[in-house]
Image 1: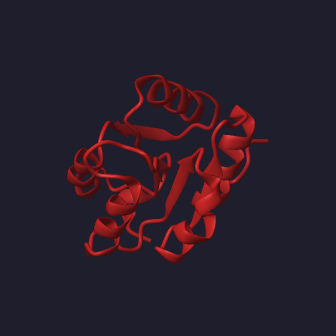
Image 2: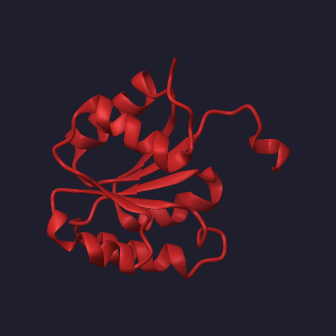
Length: 132
């Protein structure tokens, strides 16, 4: 494992256009989960930040203006720096679950969510041990 990543909190890049959800998810994952979270308000912003932030996981909304989550996922998968980063959709649109996986997502977390459930699912996707 690369030494620069040893001993640091797991990093989550959260790409979401709704301000209320941005704050809520960031707060839950940082205060309850102990993660480091960077929020980006658009797909384009998320794509710019990924190479600088080096996330362990990308949480991605589906319905966003200009660049939807599917387009963001395709762009992430086509870029060497982000091709292997796990991507999990956080969405109310669960009916497309298989489509998300076929495009290369590692999973889907349903909105609305329970805070503890969100933390547990993110820990599972990042292989972060559960809190004692």
